[in-house]
Amino acid sequence: MIRIFDTVSLPLLRWLDAEDAHRLAIQGLKLLPAMRPAPDDAKLAVRAFGLNFPNPVGMAAGFDKNAEAPDALLRLGFGFVEIGTVTPRPQSGNPRPRLFRLERDEAVINRMGFNNDGADPVLRRLAARAHFGGIVGVNVGANKDSTDRVADYVRLIETFAPVASYFTVNISSPNTPGLRNLQQAAQLDDLLAKALEARDRVKQKSGDTPVLLKIAPDLSLAELDDVVHVARSRRVDGMIVANTTLARPRTLREQTRAKEQGGLSGRPLFRLSTRMVAETFVRVEGAFPLVGVGGIDSGGAALTKIRAGASLIQLYSSLVYKGLGLVESIKTDLASTLLRTGRDSLSEIVGADAATITAEDWPV
Ligand SMILES: Cc1cc2nc3c(=O)[nH]c(=O)nc-3n(C[C@H](O)[C@H](O)[C@H](O)COP(=O)(O)O)c2cc1C
Image (cartoon, rainbow, N blue to C red; front, side):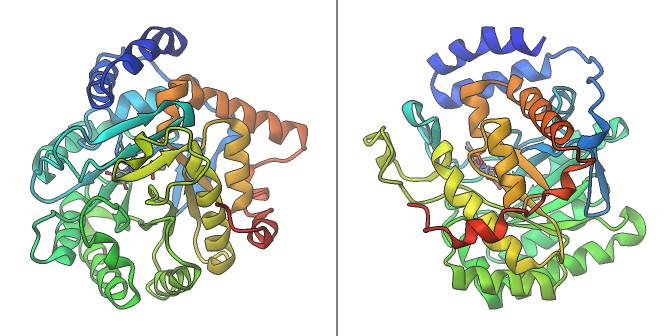
């Protein structure tokens, strides 16, 4: 079924403008028949942040910004889906074109700018599907013209707590001017204190929803020291490493496209984001689990990310080039690695290579 979907849709979607293709993919997913997903190999199960994930492969934020198709994505085999980024009020984002494929690099540049329907319709959609279960996280952000960004995160956490499996506090999008400043220690401390207070305020009614922090891969190691210090002292439940990068590796082949402003994702992000996972892992010292994201496009890449320190992984850009069948193929590869090495679960290898990776030359 997925193979047919990919065979028909991939060449067609690649021929369209990138944003039109994305819109069509969401519409296609909404039409997907409600079949039951094949059960996952029990060895792929992951327990993290108090949640039981059937497998570690998640849909990264930004694909289903408005919660239009989380159940279709879960049925396609994802172990969890992160919707958003959602902002309190709807916003249209940056002018088009704002999404670009770098075909020969298997990469994407986007400067979408948090285009989304705003909290109300997204909340209605999530409430309507709540009885289906499955792990659906809500990625939250501030409106571009907000006069109190921290208040935006607080309001979203209070609003979405009854329907969110977890929250991601996104302070790492490069496309909302100034948002990344929230990664600075004093601002981050204030934001996390208030975000976690909000979660605790609604705990009675909505349970103890985990709150994760999503960071940029472009932080210096001194900045990462500060971020991890604050995240640990405020006791966040986990971190997502990482968002898109503003860097443009010299090795990019699509040099003209590479000049477009925005965040780069996909294969050229793999080494930098994996290094950041390892650097975060050694600093976190087991205080909470990490989600590794950036350039995962195969079972081997997923395994490398896990060995760098990720308990869970997410992907987005590689789906553009490899199709949705990639999810099953990553899971099959992970399960066969466990079988071949006689291990019972992926938790046994999380971070196994972190120390080695952090000793390597910095990826360029
Ligand atoms: C078109 C596009 C839109 C994105 N929108 C968001 C977003 O709204 N919020 C967010 O936290 N990350 C967003 N991301 C970043 C992804 O979640 C992910 O961190 C990044 O793309 C790296 O993973 P990948 O190389 O597998 O794509 C977006 C990525 C792309 C390509």
